[in-house]
Image 1 (cartoon, rainbow, N blue to C red):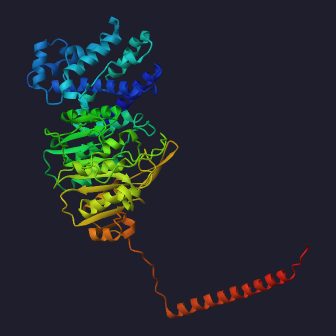
Image 2: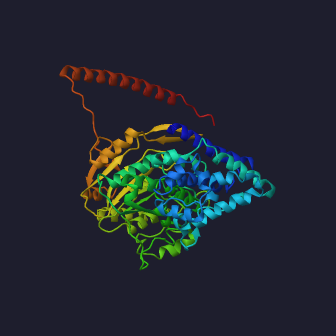
Image 3: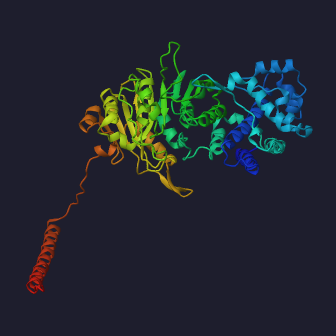
Length: 552
């Protein structure tokens, strides 16, 4: 089947699952995303298992030659299943015959189907717990599946709801088996489509922060550079969201050459990230997903209790978020937050947070980068790169004085869907080997488009290449980029804004002596006329003043 056909069929599958939720009163419900993601993932597990099982040396021929592999698998004994599992590649889900879509579909009319559907999902989660479970900062395991028909309040409708879901995932037009050889490209597209309604602004106190793929790609490529020999490196995002930055970084390095670590306070984001890792061939890293507050209780530690250091860190943190209850506790960690923690606001407005939490994430990143080699990139409000006071000033002085920052790219307005704030990306290198800093003003790039009733900007592929090429090769381009020394930055008050280093240019045009004389004569004639008009106006004003009388 052509890729475009399977892509269309998969989108129809996702739309169908959402339609089913809507038909049963769960449209835009807080649990809808759990249902959609779990059912989609169950379909993925079924097809992934079938794809890999047919490739194992012992049982693959038997399954491949069958008219329907899952019907043949229904006849496997428990011992044969366990033996088959031993041949499966790392990260492949383990399914017993009773767990396949084929088996479940054929059991729809047996009664109490919703309970069978839910118990099947729970069983799959249990036997795959070591592979697909993630944890909270308190070490509580969050399994891959949970009962979902219980979200239907009317128990008499649950069987019908489960049958409706099965109808879509059992449709033979959607078969992921044909797409697994295509690696992450297809599934990255599907992931974005799958979560598009669950990753928007306005998501409450801990809104999801989704980074455009173009920005994620720029960050990854500029961090990795021309280093094609990376092996066994660690990559972390302390405010991971659904994992866009980590996926771009992993694909740039190579999925089999890096290990992913993440933390996010949102359970929803963490579940989406787990799905993203599964769809992008990064299953072994699921055990490194931590759900919890990074600033208050970082989850990645060494055996001695010290915080783990990483080769690469990327982050698009929330810019402002009020955390008065945790502020004093966080501030006690003076090693990590050496520049300080924002003060508590005098009043709390949920719609207008005031505490600049990104300042804490910058400090956390700097602390957790591996000394001597760690590299990081973080999205910040553009106002930060010229700040002249407070915590921001201390951070700027440190990253310049210690030669940690090696680049800054200021992005176009409205390039992020979650904020109208102008943003820039800072690049750090703990090797401190750079003598110059590349500053790029990309604010004039991008094409505008409408996203609903909102004006957005997106970078074109050619513009991404322009930014990467200019940065990587340290090119100086008029009104676009400069390459400056750390001393020059200090002289400019630690500003990392490219525009403050651009030369002011005066346009000159050569003219002849005759042209000069004519222009002077024209200017003189024009001025004489204006002076004459001014004198007439002055005389008229005096005349009007003389004519005024007192009428008291």
